[in-house]
Length: 276
Image (spheres, rainbow, N blue to C red):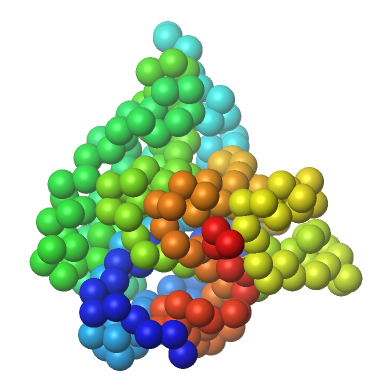
């Protein structure tokens, strides 16, 4: 097992594919959320110096409503903003569920709503208030962000993924690692929910990503933030820039996997994205 530093900050995303049933509207998976919270706690107790910034996707909540109203495409002046409000409410509804479950099980999460301060330009997040997150970490809390709606200077509004929020925050906090927890065991050369012969890609670097990029398809179910390809591209960019050392993509269906990866930076489960 690889050694952990005395104090380490790790970003963890609980993907919408694992905490909700993305094929059914607004159907959370409370038992899965509870178990993943317990796995994070187990890693923190064992390590003694692990700090977590947590995020979650919108799954069958925000994505379905966002797709209905095409919020990610923007709204012109004078347009109907009802869809923007409904999409934000759907994302917040899932966030409330995740927050309540984790708090009830002893994880000291503090929900930080991205849309309350996020500012975008042409779909790209250019500003978000980080002081509450910094203070939460300083006091031993677990800041909890999520995919959300946001106002956009160029197109009125957009939808920002959890990966986009992580990318912005990573430049502010430089996490040692990012762990992405989804439904499948990392990245595959094709959709494993469709193709039985799909093969897992154990390791991706900025160089090899160029070679496999064409093979990566969208996510299984509705996703208005770009699917798997845009998420992986965002993480590869962070590694290439040296903002984080390693990104781990694992399955939340494999019990104990999150604890193992948090305690062992060199774990080979799932897919690892690293510079070399």
